[in-house]
Image 1 (spheres, chains in turn purple, blue):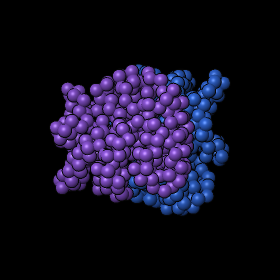
Image 2 (image 1 turned 60 degrees about the horizontal axis):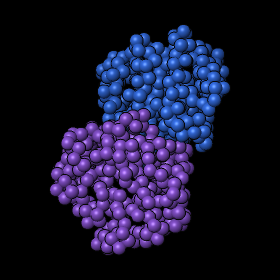
Image 3 (image 1 turned 60 degrees about the vertical axis):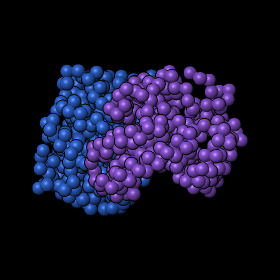
Image 4 (image 1 turned 90 degrees about the vertical axis):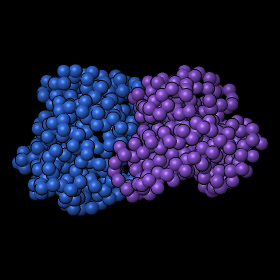
Length: 292
Length: 292
């Protein structure tokens, strides 16, 4: 297991973590500047932030700063109520693959979607099995394109509390079943993003990380689970402030040969997004060394 | 699958559902009266409500109303930081078994506990594996006593969002692995409580219900998952108001031979607990017929 205590060379910043500074939107170019100033070597930007700053502009900034992309957030949201909706999702996901490629990302992270309409509070139906079938079919179809342009797809199993509205793939086992079905040769074109926030609770986590192996472990995300958690989406904790034994999980992932970045992804309306982004980043760096 | 649309003979009311009326505490005797007036045949009371009203008093009321108990809530909370804490938990669980017996409950529901101190916001450690070992040992020890007085124990797998502070048994598969280990003969002394709120998201749910079989299916709880969910604990929905396909899950359970009560358990600070308890109960009865 790598020693993170001496430096932050393996730290990546998911740009959602610095999305807001003192409660106000912080544009992506400013986030990239800040990361570069602190010697952060990798980031993982969100599509909406890239779109707001302009893809070409962001690509230039990433290159001029010499930043790696530990991932690109995000593709997915495959389920829909009709064929036109499925097609629109596919088209959008192809664009996400193209953007990931232009930015030089190591993978496109997939938050696969769930019951259509549920995110807006009006689920079109209650058939999670149907949503799961559409997800499988959608990933399979996207995979053909992603392979052709050599962009790996990382399925991110989301915590079961998001099963209705954000992702109906909710365990590592389920994600790896999809990988086995759609990429039986373990080509590296399809794998998983392991976010400790989503999977720390799983009694089968260690076994499934071992099952994934190096070929399927495409990304590793960290933050912490707070007790109590005040909000289902935007109350993630800084590493070390919660109950997740992050080093133990990182040990499992690295024992499979994973040698990539440890990406900090914190959504925190009430706490971290209220602070100055430079304070948040300094804390990420310190906790990367002490608590990851 | 039984037809629930014509009457509510298979409805049970978990008394937490009516714990408050217009925001004020409703004592258990009043809840029992209300249920009896509406022709409800079964309830599942909570220990704190029973203690407040007096065990003997509640036992008399239950008998005079002719109420069955679809369960008794709850035993569990096994993990502790030291031997004295483990012993105290065991002693308390023995008392819960005795109370369940005096009340004539069909089973004692176990919410098994998790990281000691986490419920109060200060977890004593982050070793969920240790908590799980203590849970296994605690159930095993309690089972010896519960068998001797013929009180079945129902492990309730709780939603993974409670893994830190309420229960580190979070899937049907995990609960059934415990049952297989501690009661390999499927004697009926140990089984599971299936609450749709906790397990609806699980891609292995149908398979695990089939694995459980009649001997292990000791209780069936219903409410609904709202989108959005505003609070991790106390924002459960009335059946039909959320995204859970309850009839489908009930069909799986009944196809294994389960023929017990369908128990409504709703914690709802912002909505149902603000209404008059009689309105809540009438709604439970109506939704039992239309949405369960």
